[in-house]
Length: 241
Image (cartoon, rainbow, N blue to C red; front, side, top):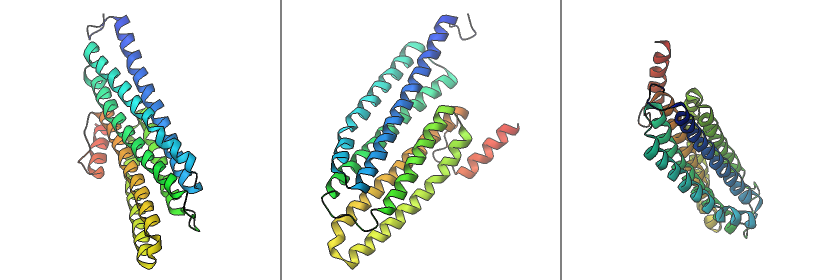
């Protein structure tokens, strides 16, 4: 019997449970990534059918969250995990909540894309939204990669990228306000574009949250309300100790 008091068979089963639930989180993340990509594509191409498909697909994200959450509750109740294993489960529960909210934002973009498909597309074909969507998708993808590899250094780097997303959103917002002031006929579409940009900015926030959970899993440190400079200094000091 090992030092935790679990027999080798039980310990092996426990590790399999943990790996299984981590794998399911990544599957959920992959589907959410697809939802996000399709939502932005539907807007850019004026594809109302694709936008509707994204919106209808949100129920699958919700079902994944509930299922993984139930599995985590079962593990907590039957395995009594300690230390790093407990941190992993807590981080997974938080991560799937953020993934579900990314799915909600993708659903919102899908609905807006479906509505805007009936309107004439602008000359730039939503170039700024395409760029912002690419940044948001990359953040989500990289956050999930850091989660899969438990790479705290990569997670911290991704956290810093959220500021770029914020700046791009503010730029789009200012541009849309200018359009509305110059031509009232653009108000409806400009407002829809602002809502899409806001959704993408929030997706970046959720990706950042996932990265913060990765740091928590690896180091056991909650960095949600700590400056990234201070976090990096502390973690560098730990690694040198």
